[in-house]
Image (cartoon, rainbow, N blue to C red):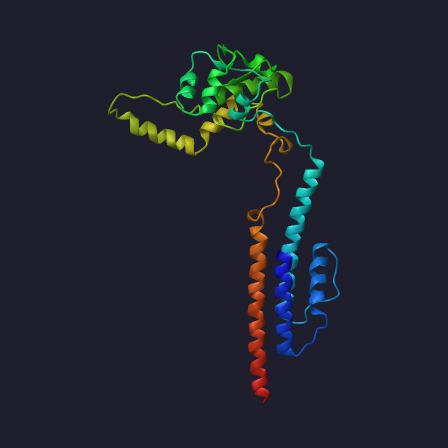
Length: 281
């Protein structure tokens, strides 16, 4: 589509400049078409516009086509070289839709009531279809890592289990799905009603959280998880996708800006030519 737009603009611009400067170009449409195609295939072209307006559009198209072809070739190379590994269970819906791997819930936790009262059929099925319970996520880390069952646990405990697994085995046997079933941030510091310490504590907590200290302290306490928390691009369903219009807005803006600037240069050339013609008369 962009090649067609550039070709049409180049034909119109070259013909307009030819009328202004009395320049005749034979087989203009075929020359412009071959020029645009050779640019995409990174081949040189013997034909170029003779005036500034057309040459400015040529320069803009060279820059835009370089971005287009580099992005296309990079995505194509990645799709051909990287193995595509599909993760069968990456959400709660995937978990309840399969029957190969059983799942269990933590005994005595609020997750049972939370899922049943959510009103979501998928979450309710996660409770009704469970194969049992386990004492807590940390004590069941070995059974989860060995593939005996899947578990719905809080993220902090699972990161600790990942750290333990990678530190003891040097491999990542645990995986955290991308879908968040529930967040483990439902914690708070309690004060008595109308306590004078509450505003000061809130200010300190906000500053520590916004400065990233909480995440830093958590990473320092739970080490050896970065390798297991980083899913490879080949393992993600949306890791390599086709380029859409949003991904190419940058070069399209450059191309449209170059065309506008080329039109402005042509108008300046036309005005200057008219002034010279009047002065000679």
